[in-house]
Length: 370
Length: 97
Image 1: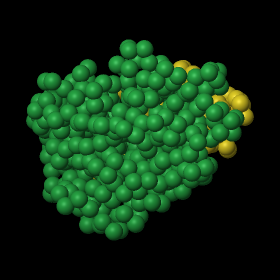
Image 2: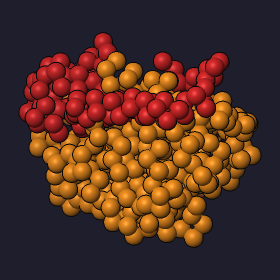
Image 3: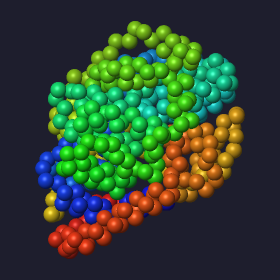
Image 4: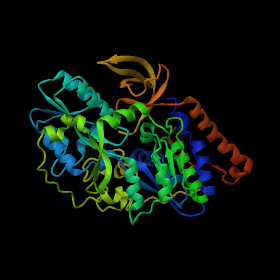
């Protein structure tokens, strides 16, 4: 396929990796923010192509993983109501809530549906005026334009039976929070290319300057990821702390203007709890006051939710990069993608699932061919 | 859900007042919302997230990046680095082709 195969060339990958080995003189810890990149790194063995000095810390950029437990429990409560058709991206159905997941609600008779696009949920609301159609609007800046458009279209058409349970999270405040943490080890970031395709990267230069940290906008194909790492290492070795765009075919400085305009209209900044991490100020979006009528949290009374996390799950430490998935005692034993204890084992973008699916079940010896 | 893929815009149309398109992902066709790419035309390639085209792929930049990747190798050969890292026999490539 065009724009895929060219960026998966094994020989060029070896050459970029060779250059990374050549320019690396000391240990560096680089965080790839996005779970999609974690997936690409493990699937393509990029971690094993790097010199031992380069450590990749897997970031919190998995929307399924960081959606707070309280929000999952609210989704479960709403989805179980008889008048509700609950629509979600497929990844969310197996995420464990306090005592069950959306699959369980479905098996117990709840009308839970997987949709590809939030507009599919709007179409269901159009078709079934007798049902309350609720969409679970989660994700980063990548899914936000889709969710914003769904609410916007519902309001334009006066679809009073559509609402959204919103739990959006944002990348720049997370980078800021990671750099402010007293235990932080991250020295550079691969920024998520597709988040930047929407938002541009005008938000990042102040972060790079303030925290003296290189930030390289990086794509998802193996050569894109390797090139992002190469440019990051080059900056680290030179003592630079700039924002660089290594994903120019997709990302511009300004981003997608029509998408940002609608996001501004539909959403408003809010403090957001990240599962496993805690509350990060102004790190999320909720529906703006103009769209408050479409907020499922207002439409359905879900205030009395009591949440309890599994004491055996260490997803919070994985999400903050303080342990690797294989260091968790439950990994691959009582916690697997078929029976996950935590959300990081559910989504293909979750670090635990990626480690499990791509054979990092035991800590592999690093392959150094230099 | 962030694992977006590039597709080619095959057809543009309207549905309930919203700009939509049919995209060709290497033979698989899907309907996506094109409202966020008002200037995109049939034949353009776009990155799609959860049913929404959010970014047009810039052909010139893609070619430039590929040219740069190839040059990386050439530069190495000129510096004699490849000889030091001679891949003979080549290690098994972890990147699926």
